[in-house]
Amino acid sequence: MSKLGLHILDTYPGALRPMRVVKLVDSSVETCARVRQAVGPGCLMIYRWCLTEPEQDRLLVHPHDGALEWHERYADAMRAIHA
Image (tube, rainbow, N blue to C red; front, side, top):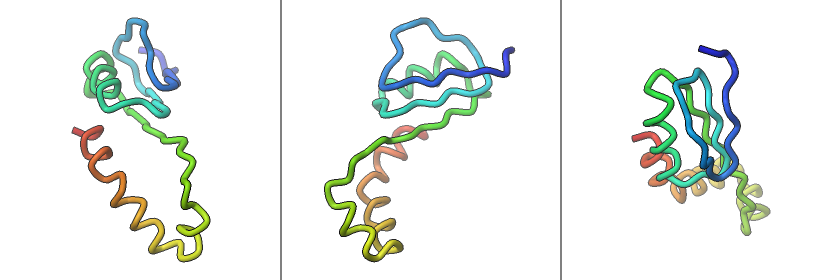
């Protein structure tokens, strides 16, 4: 198995095989599930959102509270991706 992995932006229409690492950027929960099934349970999957927060300035005024608010907003999506 190669030490290299894929960097997937949004979605990837090609065939996948077991690998060590996959980084998904702005992918849907469905894409994450499809990739997980193809790459297997031993693959480290890194997921990243490139979100532009419309309220970013407000959230950063009180970083701790802003982080908690952000987490609450995306907690369901994070749980769905992890499942």
